[in-house]
Amino acid sequence: MNRARILAVVLALLGVQLGWLIAPAYACGCGAMVADPASQIAVSSEQSLLRWDGRQEQIVMRLTVGGDADRAAWIMPVPHRATVRLGDPALFDQLATAIAPVHRTRYHFWPRNGDWPFDDQDDAAAAAPPAAGGVDVVDRQRLGPFDVARLTATDPAALDTWLHDNGFTFPARLRTALQPYVDRRWEYVAVRLAPRSSHTPLHGALDPLHLTFASDRPVYPMRLSRLARTPQSLGLYVLAAHRMETRTAIGGQQPDVVFAGRLDKPAGALGRLATGTPYLTALNQQFPDPARISGDHELRRTAADTPVQQVVHEDRLREVAGIPAWLLTVGGGLLLVVTAVVLVVVRRSRRPVAPPPPVRTPPPFPPSAPLG
Image 1 (tube, rainbow, N blue to C red):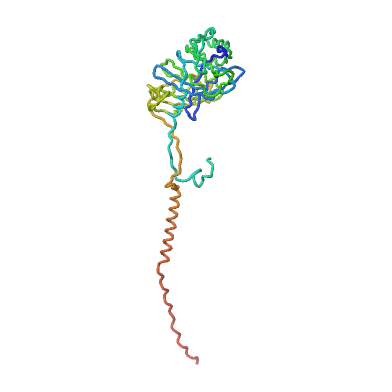
Image 2: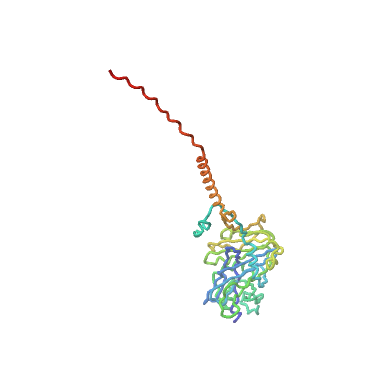
C-alpha cells in the first residue's frame, strides 16, 4: 500500500467515555475526518484523557470506528510541537473503574412492583513524502496501525493541496475551520488510520494515541466539532493537581461534573499519569447545535476541590429473618386485634349469670257479694 497516498488530516477532537459514563457520552470530530470519497467511515465513540501539570499537556485518545473505508485520516491542531506515541489501552478501563458510582442499598417498607406479592408485574513511521508548498513535514513515524506526521502550515489551502496530492478530498468547510489555528501559528498532528492488513475496513476500537506538548494552560481542541451535522456529546477526563472546570460552555450546555476526587495510589498506566497530578475530574457536556461551538475548551482550577461521586441506589424491601417487615407488622397487628376480640368474648362467656328475679303471684280477689 502506498503510504504517501494515505497520510493526513488533523486530529480534531478528543472525547471521553467516562461512562460513563456513562452512560457514558463522547465528543465526535467527524467534520475533521477525511476518507476516500468512494467509501464511508464514522467514529462511533472517542475516549480522551487530558493531563496538565502546569507546563506540559498530555492527551491520550482512543477512537472506535466503523464503516467500509480501508483508510482515513485525521488532523488535530496543537499549540506547540507535539511528540506522539502509542498509549496503553488499559488506561480507559482503569479510568472507568476510578469513576464508577458507589452502590448503596436503600430500604423501603411497603411493597413495590417486583416485591412480593407484586413480583409478577413488570417494572414500569516511514520516510516523509515531498511536502506541498506551505506545508512542512517535521517528522513522520509508524505507530501500530497509524502513520503519524507532524506538520506546520502557513495556509489551509496548502493543506488542501497536500491532502489532494496524497489522495484525499479536503472539505472546504474544514479549510475555513482551520484558519483560526493558522492565524495563531499552531502546528498539526496528521494521523493516517489504516488497518493492519490491506483492503480490510477500519472497524472497532483502535490503539490509543498519546500526544505530549508544551502548554502554559490546559486546552482541549473543540473548534472543529462545529462542522458536525448532528448533536454532539463531550466526555472528558482531566488529571491535574486540583479539580478543574471549563471557563465557558463554548456554545453547548453547561458541562456536568460526573466525578471529582483525588485518586488513591492508582496503579498501571493511570498511576503513572496521576503522579504529580492526582486529582481527577470527569466532565460531560452536550452540544445540541454544533454550529454554535465558538472555540476550544480552556480549563481552569475550581475555587475548591469539592469531591463529586455518583451514587446508585439499590431499592430493597425491608425484611426481618427473610419475612417482609410490612407483613410482620400488618399480620402482627391483625393478630393483636383478633386476640383482643377473642379475649373479650372469652371473658364475657365466663362471667356468672345472675338468676332471674322471682315471679310474684298477685293475691286472689275476694268473692263478690251476691246481687240482691
